[in-house]
Image (tube, rainbow, N blue to C red):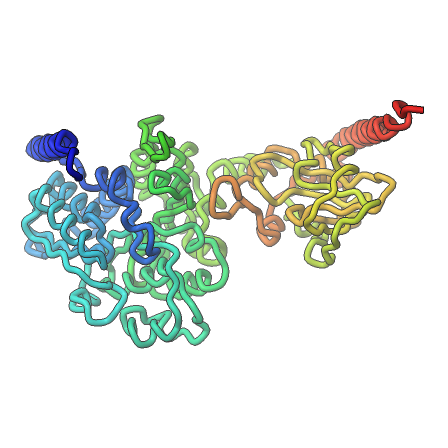
Amino acid sequence: VREGDEQLAGDLVRLVRNSIDTAFELRDHGCPFDILNEAFGHFVRDNFRGNVEDAQYMTPPEVVDFMADLVLYDIGREDGSSSDPGKQWTVVDPTCGVGSFLAAVYNRARQSDWLDVKRLRLFGQDKVERMVRLSTINLELFDSAEHRITSGNSLERGSLLDDLNGRVDVVLTNPPFGARFDAAYLASGCGDNTPFFSRLRRASTVDSELLFVDRDLQLLREGGRLLIVVPDGVVSAKGMAALLRQHVAGVATVRAVIALPAVTFAQAGTRTKTAILYLQKGRAAKPRPAFVATSRDLGFQVSSRKGVQVKVPKGESDLPAILEAYRRADKVPVDSEENVVSHEPSCVVVPEATLLRGTWTPNHYSAARLEAVGRMRGNGHFDLVPLGRLVEFRSDGRRAEPWRPGLAFISVLHLLGEGLVDVKGALNNSPKTPGLPTEPGDLLMSRINPRIPRVCVTPDLGLETLCSSEIEVMTPGADVDVYTLAYLLHTEVVQAQVRSLTSGTSASHNRIRTSELAKVLVPIPPSGSKRARALEARVDEYRRALESMIQAAATLAKIRTMDPELFAVE
């Protein structure tokens, strides 16, 4: 506040006083409001943008409360009624920020009928001194009596959290994303606090979000629970993330993976895809299903006003519906196959063994995919055949070539749907990026943004043709015609699977991996059956229509190329 800003200073003081008074009034009425989280999200976060290790991205209250409700439901159902009524419950957030997770657990416990808040021991730690002060203030505003917030790096040996290793009941946290640490730092600085990565000889550098999963598991006692917000790569990426998942599968049970929408951290300036990962330390004595869900709406959107990201209420959060589905999932038999608990929002239970053998990406287990495949399996008139058994994937085996004059180039945007190709665009395209050779009769399918169906047969354009590296190039085997496959890949039963097999850092950059595309089930009627004859007739009509339209498009493009001659000045 500078000289001459007295009016502004007075307004700010009154604003803070009124806000704090309101927070106390809400607390007294049993519905405390996390004022510091909201204030930080609006005003303070930019102070920390300079250092990725200290960057503060406040978790929206909608997500914080959901995670607290989820874990308290489980420990109340599984541990609360049978445990010693005098047992102390230790809850920790190693990167506590303004203490929102700890405050939410305290508030939810106060509303429960089984957990006396006097039995809660709340511990928080943060590298940033200001966060320690704010977290302490926040817990005071929530009237929490038994808490301890300390300053320190929770990854490194020597902090006060080391005394809690192996003794914590619950870790609720949203750690920093994107900071990288080298092997020397892990071995000398972290040691047994990150036992997996500190001893991993292949670790050159490790991202902070992976390290904190390792660190948080070390804090937990056997049977303790970790609920952590992680970027999508932790549950879907290869490399170090895949090694961590393999390690986790041996030391913990995956209870749930819940995808969050891209808007979750938009107010902080990022639309990185994130998920809630729920682990319980130790392997379950009996197999149990994992709960997999996808949230698409948190009840708000974020818009920019004069360069400031503003959170605007819009829609309705689907997290309460996901929590209710989680409670219903208890009734699903532990040895059952994949089962849909809720269609929208998508909530399914998956045998944990299926999850551990495959991918942990929630979208891959969408209710729409399971229901579409289930309906087709129940039809009885089709065999469901993996695409990998019907085609040879050629993209990896073909060397990319630079475009040169005289070549046609098919980009993703030239695949117009229903097998059509923008012939004029492909003939006039002169990209700077290399492309993959494709020949007439190849089957092309876009791997990017699969919400838009883009499948075609490479047309004969009379020129050598390249296609974008974002396109999967396939050649069908002897058992199925290329136009039959192109037709079937546009069916809803296939598209529902394709839409679910995506990974990527944001909603606008979803991609399908070839290995996942190979698992897509294609409905093939038995040879010689009535359905097979009907499909053959339909595909013949489909092929003739496409060839006619593409030929007409090529003729139109050729006519236009003659314009310079027609209008030349003699």
